[in-house]
Image (cartoon, rainbow, N blue to C red; front, side):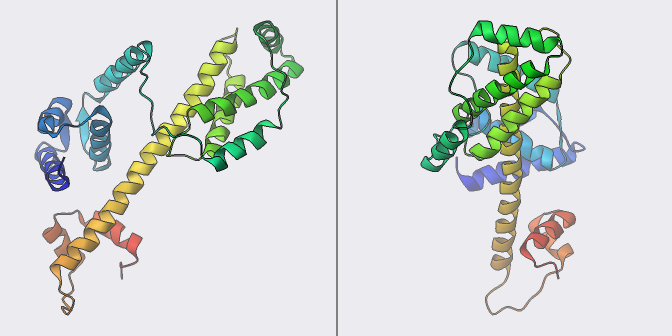
Length: 257
Protein backbone atom coordinates (compact mmCIF):
# COMPACT_ATOMS: atom_id res chain seq x y z
CA UNK A 1 0.00 0.00 0.00
CA UNK A 2 1.19 3.52 -0.82
CA UNK A 3 2.69 5.12 2.33
CA UNK A 4 1.14 8.54 1.72
CA UNK A 5 -2.29 6.98 1.16
CA UNK A 6 -1.85 4.89 4.31
CA UNK A 7 -0.93 8.00 6.34
CA UNK A 8 -3.93 9.79 4.87
CA UNK A 9 -6.23 6.97 5.94
CA UNK A 10 -4.72 6.98 9.44
CA UNK A 11 -5.33 10.72 9.74
CA UNK A 12 -8.87 10.28 8.45
CA UNK A 13 -9.73 7.54 10.97
CA UNK A 14 -8.26 9.68 13.76
CA UNK A 15 -10.46 12.57 12.64
CA UNK A 16 -13.50 10.30 12.64
CA UNK A 17 -12.59 9.21 16.17
CA UNK A 18 -12.25 12.82 17.34
CA UNK A 19 -15.66 13.64 15.92
CA UNK A 20 -17.06 10.61 17.76
CA UNK A 21 -15.65 11.51 21.17
CA UNK A 22 -12.40 9.56 20.65
CA UNK A 23 -14.29 6.33 20.10
CA UNK A 24 -14.32 3.90 17.20
CA UNK A 25 -15.87 0.53 16.54
CA UNK A 26 -14.06 -2.47 15.10
CA UNK A 27 -16.41 -2.29 12.12
CA UNK A 28 -15.54 1.35 11.39
CA UNK A 29 -11.82 0.57 11.35
CA UNK A 30 -12.17 -2.50 9.16
CA UNK A 31 -14.42 -0.70 6.68
CA UNK A 32 -12.09 2.31 6.53
CA UNK A 33 -9.08 0.13 5.66
CA UNK A 34 -11.11 -2.43 3.71
CA UNK A 35 -9.43 -1.69 0.37
CA UNK A 36 -5.93 -1.39 1.80
CA UNK A 37 -5.05 -5.09 1.49
CA UNK A 38 -3.77 -5.28 5.08
CA UNK A 39 -3.12 -8.53 6.91
CA UNK A 40 -4.16 -9.33 10.49
CA UNK A 41 -0.80 -8.26 11.92
CA UNK A 42 -1.02 -4.85 10.24
CA UNK A 43 -4.57 -4.32 11.48
CA UNK A 44 -3.41 -5.13 15.02
CA UNK A 45 -0.69 -2.48 14.69
CA UNK A 46 -3.31 0.04 13.55
CA UNK A 47 -5.34 -0.75 16.67
CA UNK A 48 -2.21 -0.26 18.80
CA UNK A 49 -1.55 3.07 17.08
CA UNK A 50 -5.09 4.27 17.74
CA UNK A 51 -4.89 3.26 21.40
CA UNK A 52 -1.66 5.23 21.73
CA UNK A 53 -3.60 8.23 20.43
CA UNK A 54 -6.04 7.81 23.33
CA UNK A 55 -8.81 6.41 21.14
CA UNK A 56 -11.15 3.84 22.67
CA UNK A 57 -11.90 0.85 20.45
CA UNK A 58 -15.41 -0.45 21.05
CA UNK A 59 -15.69 -4.22 21.03
CA UNK A 60 -12.02 -4.66 21.93
CA UNK A 61 -12.87 -7.55 24.26
CA UNK A 62 -14.85 -9.27 21.55
CA UNK A 63 -11.94 -8.79 19.15
CA UNK A 64 -9.53 -10.27 21.68
CA UNK A 65 -11.77 -13.30 22.14
CA UNK A 66 -12.04 -13.67 18.39
CA UNK A 67 -8.26 -13.48 18.09
CA UNK A 68 -7.90 -16.19 20.71
CA UNK A 69 -10.41 -18.35 18.84
CA UNK A 70 -8.48 -17.79 15.62
CA UNK A 71 -5.25 -18.71 17.40
CA UNK A 72 -6.75 -21.96 18.68
CA UNK A 73 -8.08 -22.75 15.22
CA UNK A 74 -4.71 -21.96 13.61
CA UNK A 75 -2.84 -23.99 16.19
CA UNK A 76 -5.05 -27.01 15.56
CA UNK A 77 -4.26 -26.64 11.88
CA UNK A 78 -0.54 -26.39 12.61
CA UNK A 79 -0.41 -22.66 11.80
CA UNK A 80 -0.23 -20.96 15.19
CA UNK A 81 0.10 -17.19 14.86
CA UNK A 82 2.79 -16.03 17.25
CA UNK A 83 3.77 -12.52 18.36
CA UNK A 84 7.04 -11.10 17.09
CA UNK A 85 9.00 -11.83 13.94
CA UNK A 86 10.50 -15.31 13.89
CA UNK A 87 14.24 -15.38 13.24
CA UNK A 88 16.89 -18.05 13.04
CA UNK A 89 19.65 -17.88 15.64
CA UNK A 90 22.68 -15.88 14.60
CA UNK A 91 26.13 -17.41 15.01
CA UNK A 92 26.61 -15.27 18.11
CA UNK A 93 23.28 -16.38 19.60
CA UNK A 94 24.00 -20.02 18.85
CA UNK A 95 27.37 -19.71 20.58
CA UNK A 96 25.69 -18.10 23.58
CA UNK A 97 23.12 -20.91 23.74
CA UNK A 98 25.82 -23.57 23.51
CA UNK A 99 27.79 -21.97 26.36
CA UNK A 100 24.63 -21.58 28.41
CA UNK A 101 23.61 -25.21 27.96
CA UNK A 102 27.04 -26.46 29.09
CA UNK A 103 26.13 -25.54 32.67
CA UNK A 104 23.39 -28.19 32.69
CA UNK A 105 23.73 -31.93 33.00
CA UNK A 106 23.34 -33.73 29.65
CA UNK A 107 21.36 -36.47 31.40
CA UNK A 108 17.65 -35.92 30.96
CA UNK A 109 14.65 -37.08 32.93
CA UNK A 110 12.02 -39.41 31.53
CA UNK A 111 8.29 -39.08 32.15
CA UNK A 112 8.39 -41.37 35.20
CA UNK A 113 11.22 -39.38 36.75
CA UNK A 114 9.33 -36.13 36.23
CA UNK A 115 6.10 -37.56 37.65
CA UNK A 116 7.96 -38.66 40.80
CA UNK A 117 9.63 -35.28 41.18
CA UNK A 118 6.34 -33.41 40.79
CA UNK A 119 4.75 -35.66 43.42
CA UNK A 120 7.61 -35.03 45.83
CA UNK A 121 7.53 -31.30 45.06
CA UNK A 122 3.81 -31.20 45.89
CA UNK A 123 4.70 -32.53 49.34
CA UNK A 124 7.20 -29.74 49.89
CA UNK A 125 10.40 -31.61 49.00
CA UNK A 126 13.00 -28.87 48.35
CA UNK A 127 15.39 -31.33 46.68
CA UNK A 128 12.67 -32.17 44.15
CA UNK A 129 12.08 -28.45 43.56
CA UNK A 130 15.80 -27.98 42.89
CA UNK A 131 15.88 -30.90 40.46
CA UNK A 132 12.83 -29.61 38.59
CA UNK A 133 14.29 -26.11 38.45
CA UNK A 134 17.56 -27.38 37.01
CA UNK A 135 15.84 -29.56 34.44
CA UNK A 136 13.35 -26.95 33.23
CA UNK A 137 15.90 -24.16 33.04
CA UNK A 138 17.52 -26.16 30.25
CA UNK A 139 14.12 -26.81 28.65
CA UNK A 140 13.23 -23.13 28.96
CA UNK A 141 16.39 -22.12 27.10
CA UNK A 142 15.60 -24.52 24.27
CA UNK A 143 12.01 -23.24 24.07
CA UNK A 144 13.25 -19.65 23.97
CA UNK A 145 15.63 -20.55 21.13
CA UNK A 146 12.79 -22.19 19.19
CA UNK A 147 10.67 -19.06 19.59
CA UNK A 148 13.57 -16.67 18.90
CA UNK A 149 12.49 -13.43 17.24
CA UNK A 150 13.92 -10.12 16.04
CA UNK A 151 12.22 -8.03 18.72
CA UNK A 152 14.13 -9.34 21.75
CA UNK A 153 17.65 -10.67 22.37
CA UNK A 154 17.92 -14.42 22.96
CA UNK A 155 19.68 -13.90 26.32
CA UNK A 156 16.82 -11.69 27.50
CA UNK A 157 14.25 -14.18 26.22
CA UNK A 158 15.93 -16.99 28.14
CA UNK A 159 15.88 -14.85 31.27
CA UNK A 160 12.15 -14.22 30.80
CA UNK A 161 11.62 -17.97 30.33
CA UNK A 162 13.42 -18.64 33.61
CA UNK A 163 11.34 -16.03 35.41
CA UNK A 164 8.19 -17.75 34.09
CA UNK A 165 9.57 -21.07 35.38
CA UNK A 166 10.28 -19.73 38.86
CA UNK A 167 6.88 -18.03 39.01
CA UNK A 168 5.19 -21.29 38.01
CA UNK A 169 6.92 -23.16 40.82
CA UNK A 170 5.44 -20.67 43.30
CA UNK A 171 1.89 -21.06 42.03
CA UNK A 172 -0.50 -22.90 44.33
CA UNK A 173 -2.77 -24.15 41.55
CA UNK A 174 -3.08 -26.72 40.22
CA UNK A 175 -2.12 -28.89 43.17
CA UNK A 176 -1.05 -31.71 40.87
CA UNK A 177 1.47 -30.14 38.51
CA UNK A 178 3.03 -32.03 35.61
CA UNK A 179 5.35 -31.69 32.64
CA UNK A 180 2.70 -30.45 30.18
CA UNK A 181 1.53 -27.79 32.64
CA UNK A 182 5.06 -26.57 33.32
CA UNK A 183 5.97 -26.34 29.64
CA UNK A 184 2.75 -24.45 29.01
CA UNK A 185 3.54 -21.92 31.75
CA UNK A 186 7.07 -21.38 30.43
CA UNK A 187 5.83 -21.00 26.86
CA UNK A 188 3.19 -18.49 27.98
CA UNK A 189 5.89 -16.47 29.76
CA UNK A 190 8.06 -16.43 26.66
CA UNK A 191 5.21 -15.37 24.37
CA UNK A 192 4.12 -12.67 26.84
CA UNK A 193 7.66 -11.26 26.88
CA UNK A 194 7.79 -11.27 23.07
CA UNK A 195 4.40 -9.55 22.82
CA UNK A 196 5.40 -6.86 25.33
CA UNK A 197 8.68 -6.21 23.53
CA UNK A 198 6.90 -6.12 20.17
CA UNK A 199 4.48 -3.50 21.48
CA UNK A 200 7.36 -1.50 22.97
CA UNK A 201 9.17 -1.60 19.62
CA UNK A 202 6.00 -0.36 17.94
CA UNK A 203 5.79 2.54 20.40
CA UNK A 204 9.49 3.33 19.86
CA UNK A 205 9.13 3.18 16.08
CA UNK A 206 6.06 5.39 16.34
CA UNK A 207 8.02 8.04 18.28
CA UNK A 208 10.95 7.83 15.87
CA UNK A 209 8.52 8.27 13.00
CA UNK A 210 7.03 11.32 14.72
CA UNK A 211 10.49 12.85 15.12
CA UNK A 212 11.34 12.24 11.46
CA UNK A 213 7.98 13.55 10.25
CA UNK A 214 8.25 16.69 12.39
CA UNK A 215 11.81 17.43 11.27
CA UNK A 216 10.81 16.85 7.65
CA UNK A 217 7.75 19.08 7.98
CA UNK A 218 9.70 21.93 9.57
CA UNK A 219 12.28 21.76 6.76
CA UNK A 220 9.50 21.99 4.20
CA UNK A 221 8.06 25.02 5.96
CA UNK A 222 11.36 26.92 6.02
CA UNK A 223 13.96 27.49 3.33
CA UNK A 224 17.66 27.10 4.13
CA UNK A 225 18.07 30.88 4.30
CA UNK A 226 14.77 31.48 6.07
CA UNK A 227 15.17 32.45 9.73
CA UNK A 228 11.44 32.24 10.43
CA UNK A 229 10.74 30.57 13.77
CA UNK A 230 7.47 28.90 14.60
CA UNK A 231 6.01 28.63 18.07
CA UNK A 232 4.81 25.25 19.25
CA UNK A 233 1.21 26.47 19.03
CA UNK A 234 1.77 27.57 15.43
CA UNK A 235 3.37 24.23 14.54
CA UNK A 236 0.43 22.43 16.12
CA UNK A 237 -1.96 24.28 13.80
CA UNK A 238 0.23 23.97 10.70
CA UNK A 239 1.06 20.28 11.19
CA UNK A 240 -2.29 19.29 12.74
CA UNK A 241 -0.58 17.84 15.80
CA UNK A 242 -1.33 18.03 19.51
CA UNK A 243 0.78 20.64 21.37
CA UNK A 244 1.86 18.14 24.04
CA UNK A 245 2.74 15.65 21.33
CA UNK A 246 4.99 18.20 19.60
CA UNK A 247 6.68 19.03 22.92
CA UNK A 248 7.40 15.33 23.50
CA UNK A 249 8.90 14.99 20.03
CA UNK A 250 11.01 18.14 20.44
CA UNK A 251 12.37 16.81 23.74
CA UNK A 252 13.61 13.75 21.88
CA UNK A 253 15.44 15.91 19.35
CA UNK A 254 16.79 18.37 21.94
CA UNK A 255 15.04 21.27 20.20
CA UNK A 256 12.69 22.18 23.05
CA UNK A 257 14.48 25.46 23.81
